[in-house]
Length: 138
Image 1: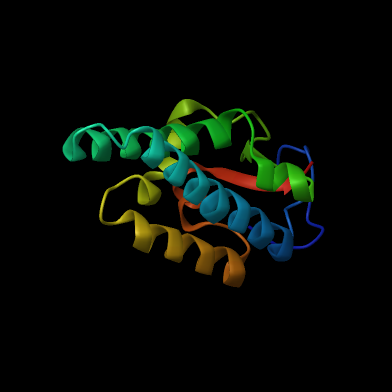
Image 2: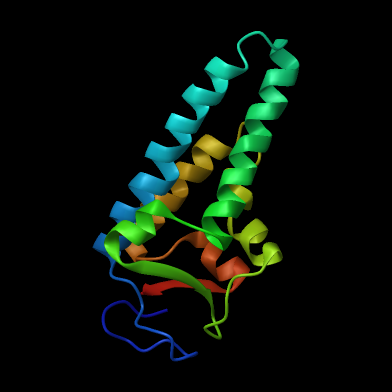
């Protein structure tokens, strides 16, 4: 994938600039998950710890799939959208594969760091290649 004003193979926009991807990632991969974790943690305070942990993981996975298939505040804020390489809407399978590093307990912290470093240095996420997705200008 090329950064800058390159045209997307599906013709639906141009590849998203690294700076916009990074700002979007800060919102979608850090701010929203932290906020969701705090709110859900407080709501689930009376739930036994093991069940609470499973529910928090499920909430994180739900957020990641929702963000890629329905609405991403970070991408919306900077004028970007996620599409398949052909320019089509992202499937559930693509959203799942794209976020696999961010779903696995005990790996997800490292996954978030890896993905943010990839965005800052390469302009796309490592898992975008796995899922055959790209973020383009909206």
